[in-house]
Image 1: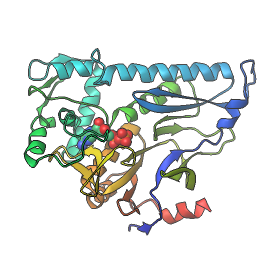
Image 2 (image 1 turned 45 degrees about the vertical axis):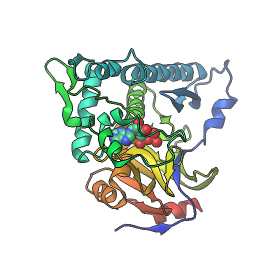
Image 3 (image 1 turned 120 degrees about the vertical axis):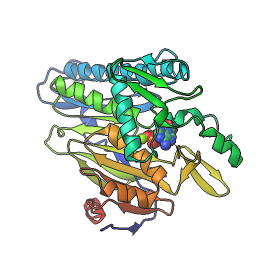
Length: 347
Ligand code: ADP
Ligand code: MG
């Protein structure tokens, strides 16, 4: 049963800053062994990252944060389609020409992305990237492009033309002009990999938050759960309610920052790869699940699927939950999230 509620404002999830104050009070000569929160904010992969670790002293805290940063930078170098030196750019440059040998890590990321395309019947598609010339979210698109132009824009899109050769570990884009991009999955992937690396190093607790796409583990030093806040994106200081995050990822796709208004309708930066039209009808989609890469891909997919299909789809997946806010500010949840409970907690 879905709980549908009308609320006054758009909601989205924003990481709690609770606990951060402790790290600000520590100084470099800190030799304490009592675990504390250490935190750093910086821009990586073109997005804001808030990195949080719990460590026994400042030195360890810094070491872990440095490690996290180098891991995210490493991933960026591999998957960025802006960096001409990345393997992803090499794949794109060789579209229609020849297969490109890549690292196993990239090969497997593409394999998983193709699985999500299958699962979502093409709503999610990393080969969306060849049509990025037609939709620009910088205010320059003021009218709907002609139907024919939109139709042509998807001519090079289609993940069935991404040819993977497991034996040779190569990726081949069959048609000239085809391109892949990890805009809808890369931040989630980076959060997962960084968390895994830190856990391996013995970090008991932390949060990798890539602009609201986060993966958290462990608890705060006082034993309490990390929290995410549901806030009003039009006024981010206004928190509606808090939710605990227990060894889990929470990822939000929203169209409150990147969108176009055409004929009074609000279109998002997430495009239906099957039609070429930007999606509309949803203001934000938040996914809760174990891994941030999947959550990232699914949040994007929900935008393309629309509210009803999106909810139906999520309700069929085990261990995945979602909160969707539609264009009329209605909040809808998958069947295992009781929104009433959330509201009660906030009081
Ligand atoms: P956010 O940028 O809000 O984190 P997403 O994770 O949903 O949002 O990713 C949106 C980005 O994904 C777009 O900017 C674009 O680069 C890419 N993209 C757009 N439509 C699709 C799609 N249907 N499938 C895969 N990637 C997409
Ligand atoms: Mg996404």
